[in-house]
Length: 228
Image (cartoon, rainbow, N blue to C red; front, side, top):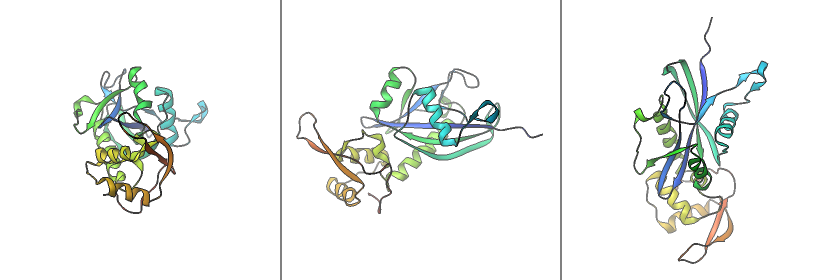
């Protein structure tokens, strides 16, 4: 008789706080690894007799984020599946890892309510493997690598910003995530040439003239060429 493996989904929630990229973690209350930090996650529902069946691992991830945090990310995508007999002391397990991006203004109330703890990834990694349950730091590293790679050829970093943002905000987000400095005029020209943004209202900020606001034309656009 075959033993059913443990199947879970886990979210690497990333947001920008100033010039720092942060990951949102929860503190585990139950064994194993009680008291340790962990990625928000949970079991995939696959029990039709109980009326609990997730249509997909993506739907399972959205359900868990909604039930645990009351949160729906601006952007969610599957990154990888981590599996093996030694990941979890309870038995053979597999976790479908998702990258979840959102702006700070939405994530901060979860921190204030004690539901999430934010930890710095860029520019300084403040976490060690022993700080996190299971292999979750490795999962964070994998999701971060996906974000860095995809930032160079898509509009993914815009999901770390408010829905309406300045071109300078988008450039700063790109530079923080990738670690690659860019020329202001070249960055602006390349992005506008791709026609992936639409003009929005003017944005006012202290000490300067109003700046043109932009929003994404579609949820995620793949660029015809790399930004840098």
